[in-house]
Image 1 (cartoon, chains in turn red, blue):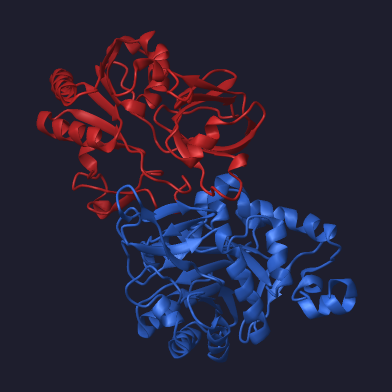
Image 2 (cartoon, chains in turn cyan, yellow; image 1 turned 60 degrees about the vertical axis):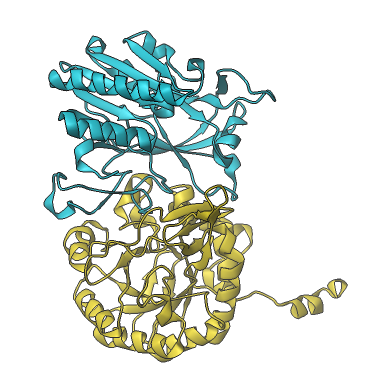
Length: 272
Length: 319
């Protein structure tokens, strides 16, 4: 069922840094708490567009973020400072106005009785926080998490609480090889049980997952983080090319919008 | 307060309940924004550019944020006129709000075919001829940079769509935009809209390459508002047909500046990306903004911009 998105103007409640500060005392990972908008529902993997009023005219675009988590009162977004927009977001103070529209896009499949393997690369862990919290049978899920920064930079506590989480930190090429080997093994186990694989992370990570999925015939969904200007299907900036496995013949080999037909796709249905 | 306006054309008028339209390419087919406001509350909806046959557009990345603006090189991706007429148009509130079809073609004949096809659609109130897109290899801005070609395309569409109001969207990427506007007027245009995007580029210093796959793209957003205002002012003084202002309008104050410079109506473009209710909000706030500056109608304000010498005459202290 389509969840109707709404536009909310919300006061920031709190911006909390995660992980250790850098040599000059700067943090790079933050959780932004906002009052929960009047959404009736949302699906993990869906995203929202977030634009603080402080962007003014200088930064015209909102930024897309996977929905990390919601409580009865709060909406929690998790972000890494990687540009002008997120730098300004990290400086938000209590009460600063933030425009939020969502929930947008589709969301990950939930198959309560299937073994579900969650594959996260770096900030790709964010949508899985909500996924694990909302899963009706979390004991059927497990996670493999590859990351470069210390584990405490990421919102893993909510995941640790519910499911087994194996995290591998990559700081050398050898560790990356080890992670890829483990990734292949875990996907193979999951495929043999006809389980579901869900992945989110940087493009090279998703390409690796897609290649293994093809080889192992693993049922796999991936979440694409394409550049978006609007998030609602108007700008046509977030296009992704489909493969011959796309369900509607007229769109096979063509372009679809990550914001409307995604951001979650079956790995075999898109080209990366 | 009544803020309705009528774009009085040479052949067809276009009545708008308010002077706030959406700009092509920034509002999809309109339905994408239905969750964020009442489409019927807009003065009109200019839909994403339509071509005779489906177009895939340019490779990605095709949009990039810049200081107070954005570059796009989407390249007029659309599903073609038949898909628009069959699937999108029937869902739009065309009985309540004029739907303006922005049309693109690579030749004058193709423009005529496209216009003839849309001429029979009751749901389309007007055609906006795109002779100014900088992101396509054929046609596009090449038409809009030559007054003879601009006139030829306008004339072909005028003849092929006798039932429709014909608006010509002008490019700022010319030496004399007023000359292009006059060509369109002489060829039978009912109105002109200005401006389309400014040709620009952005580079990634780290990767040492352009940020857009197409290298060049069209700049829009608040960054181009001064250019758009200048163009509207120049065009409004050169033609008798109505002028629709486009370029960096994000609030009612901006809209009134364009009307003061001579625009009959405005289009909201990149502002729709800043907040998806931007066009709805501008339309809703316009009456209060008019009251605040003491005007009772759009006509009272339109084109009343005083030039520097007039101000000096009125206020000698400014001399």
